[in-house]
Length: 207
Image (cartoon, rainbow, N blue to C red; front, side, top):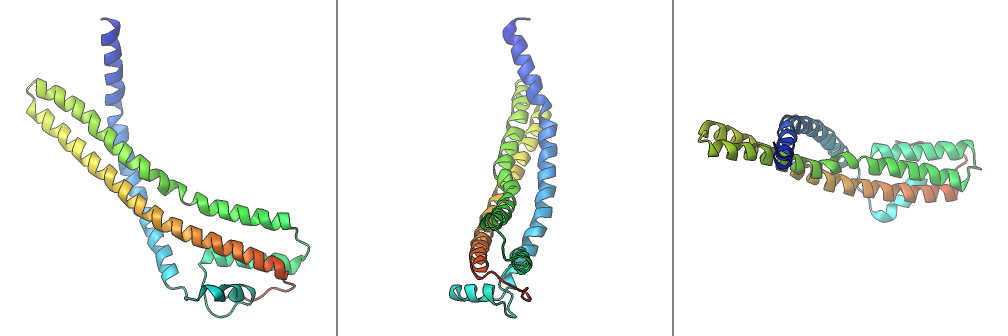
């Protein structure tokens, strides 16, 4: 056996061995996306129930909270942490406050990473799951094995559909979540500036 034939066989074996792992990954991503969908709609319901207010009202609500709930839970938790910190120690350094803000912002950005990766990984796996059985299907066609060809085409088309659907759904979720994260980061920065300037001496009630 010459080198060229050996290399072709080696590449073929690698390609063929990837089909079932790719199909398994597509199944895992589909299950994960279903779970993620539940969390997405839970957050959407939380935000729908928030009280609406004009942008010019936000500084006053942050400094002197009223009975309205205009921020999601993760922003409210951050505000409560800042108020507690200022109530316990007015000498909190600017660097310490900035570090807390940056850490919170980083965690919010990280929440987008997984769904962002699915946007690329889903269609990529779908393409791999298409090309591998297409190769074996063409080989079966050359041998006149139409049953093998039909089976491989079914796998090829279904993996394509699943991969593209994962990418589309992930892109939809990513777009909406990014807007939510940007809004929360803006409110975190505004709250940090306002509370740092006022330097609370007592904990205020948050509803």
